[in-house]
Length: 313
Image 1 (cartoon, helix red, strand yellow):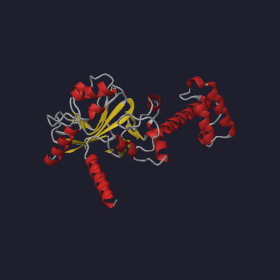
Image 2 (cartoon, one colour):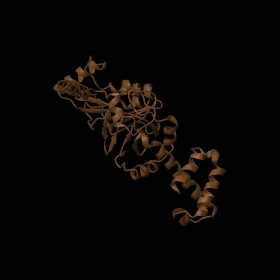
Image 3 (cartoon, one colour):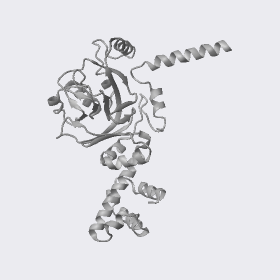
Image 4 (tube, one colour):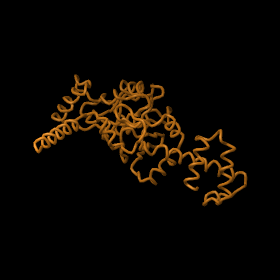
């Protein structure tokens, strides 16, 4: 019996070590990373938040989302100071994160990555790993890549890969690093990128080391399947199990503002009354106002009522 246990332990450790060397994270590992998510998943294990929630998220401000994330204990989900590939293009975009980690190349590590890429069926023949993560994208994915801010010989995408990203995902790229072919990238209709800069060189001294593992994007940490909110002024990465709560709270905060500003303009309440803790009279008035405007609400009225009852606003 003892020998059997030793054999099984050895087999487990061997299997664990083999899996740990993978470039693409296994579905089991992604599920472990995102264990708080209880909903539908993609075959690769990533949480599949709904398209409806992503569209509702796109309508919120960074401030509305960020305030709730901080209250929930997630202060490391925002990164600012981006350059947009196309300042006249799509300026608000949401999606589900596919993460990629790049590192400076060294021969021994590159050999191991290429050998592992062969085992995983990746395009290893030209020893170019830059495109490997792109082949995993599906509609609604947001490509999130850590290029460690390397410009020369470290650009994460050019026009060919940019077209590849958009054709698969109908989204853009978040690149903590640099890209090339800016003029041609701007011509991809519907595509945009949040980047740290551009450089005309192509990737040669940089190596992809992981797909769909945790990555650091500046001040933010991103897990595969995170909901991404990208706007002109910054990017927020939202844990999928918190998305519904954050969207609803943001929408209701926006409704409070619309209601309050309308009532101030009408002279019914002062700005001080609206900015203070609401009286029972104002709370009742808000519920009546919401019913009168139910067709314009971003959420079902029943969902709003449930939230107000539970939060006792």
